[in-house]
Length: 222
Image (cartoon, rainbow, N blue to C red; front, top):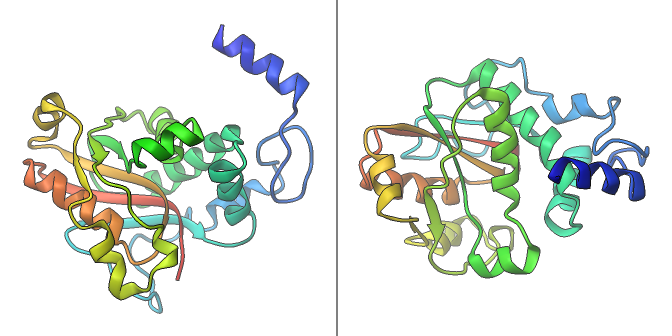
């Protein structure tokens, strides 16, 4: 029934590519390669980036710079209600991780605050992570919750971003705590800048007994 509803929705309100405006697909075939400009690059942080892999992450990967089609697609997903674009974004994440990622037994989306999810109707990182999970064949593990609302990271300078997310995350349940132990987990989010949010999530998972935590995002902003 869900598939049938989506098919009807696509007919009534066709997707429009955020890159070129072409109607028919969430991101058209011509623009899709721009979601994955780093797909075949070696793993690791290139020289010239603002910082190396933020501790305590073992690895931080991303698919493309936060600009152009990527930025427009994420804006449509987060603020325009265009959830269909999460699938090509998640597939780009899967492509990058398959090429450069090491390890990882399960995918953990970085959660938004429950109130923001209620207003938006969904969690954009969870949708991206779900698509990546399906493509990589790794289980989706929503182990984290955001315990308090935080200021949007882009509104803060680098000095204040770490303080903004400190102790902001917790485990979703006792079952989540059990599922965390001794596992190498892969965090998935939309955009990374300094990595403070990803680092805060990793600290929570490691404190609960995770063997290691890596991360990947759709984009990274300098």
